[in-house]
Every structure is written in structure tokens, then in C-alpha cells.
Image (tube, rainbow, N blue to C red):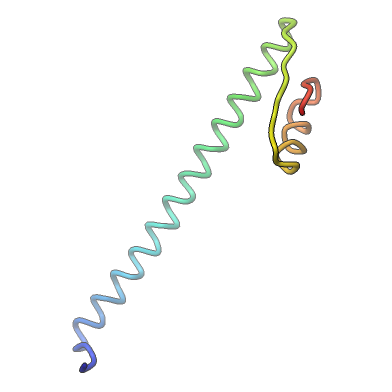
Length: 78
């Protein structure tokens, strides 16, 4: 198999770069949406607690439980 011609090689490299950039953008957008959702959940949870509700959070991840306990110290997490 012979190597690609310079124009083809350049086009392939550009496509790879564009693809890598788009993947990075999608990841950043996904993270921003997750953070916004987490903030909204915390806000609603605080509102419910302030109205007297007893909330219980359940998760199997110790890291997620630790993060949740930091954000919502008045909620019981299992």
C-alpha cells in the first residue's frame, strides 16, 4: 500500500484535529450540564429540607456520597 498523497494526508490530519476538538467540546458541554443539574438538585433539596422534609440519599459510590454530604450536610446519606 502506498502512502497517501500530501493533500489527502493533510485532509486526514485536519479531520482528526476537528474530531478531537469536537469531542473536547462535547465533553465540556456535558460537564457543564451535569454541574448545572447537580446545583439544581442541591437547591431543591435545600428547599425541601427548609420546609421540613426528611431527605435520604442512596449511592454505592463513596466519592459521590462524600461530595453529596459536603453539598447537603442536613441530609442523611446511605
